Image (cartoon, rainbow, N blue to C red; front, side, top):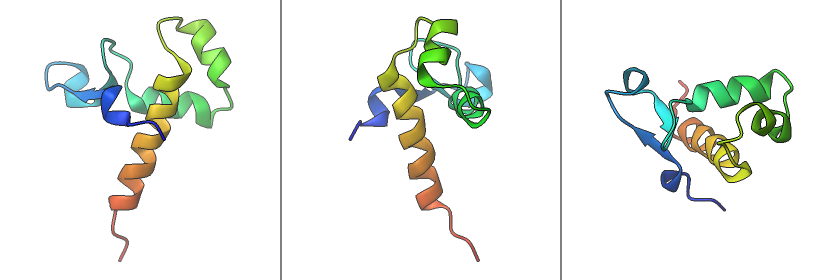
Length: 73
């Protein structure tokens, strides 16, 4: 399992504090949106060659962890 904290950071001066892939301005939400729209990791990397499969996977782990913490009433 990938430790997403190695790949994801939150900085209030970047993208209004949204979680982003470290060293980029690409937000976790951008990556999740691309995946939700049917793009593969390979397609995303071909468009954004600075990204790696591990970073994309870290976005999924981040979302999974956030979902686990949400309490539905």
